[in-house]
Length: 296
Image (cartoon, rainbow, N blue to C red; front, side, top):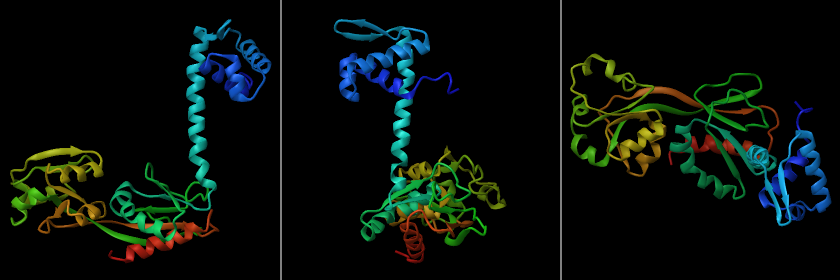
């Protein structure tokens, strides 16, 4: 493929000239002579075998081929710049990269990060929730929080938090149903379902609920959106206590203590046993353990 691609510097020059509509303005932006700009673009056209610019006395404009190429080059350079920007903090000794589940990040970690910043004012925390990480590469991640522990010789894995599913509802709904007994209270407000848990965490498959007249409020894919639906009085949810933790503390939702809880896999905290990418990773590891032990 490298044999068919023009030199990268030609593409940068092409982008500048195309954006600015002028070889002279491109030379100023790139700190090159106008002659060098012209020579690079002539060579680029020679490599591609087609004209990219209409040249006139006032400047230049793109041919149809030039417009098509510029669209691709512009998008490619933007993606490259974004990628370079994303890896910039990796070299910082004040950054720590934490891979964790979204419910843990929203319900437990984010509300506590301000306290971490008080201890380490310069720290930059990267919270990565897009995919579950199954191994620690000290370039890509410093710490992992997961419900799937990694028990290998090169990973230190310790229990962090217990978790369970709990029944919750909004404050107005609680005024109507919180004094009712379970399971009849489920008939008095819509039920909110996770797409991955059509039986409401397994509760609706039990004999005691088979004859209830339930109203389905919504089926939602994302646990965080389901919590938001509860806050907005759309119904009763059965969610992770860790996810609901902050909303409960802030008085946005009420726990329906009548609803039986269901144990969920505990969360584990992991780090490499090798020297960390940055010493602050070990400090944050210890801080997470300390905060997990601290009720507040």
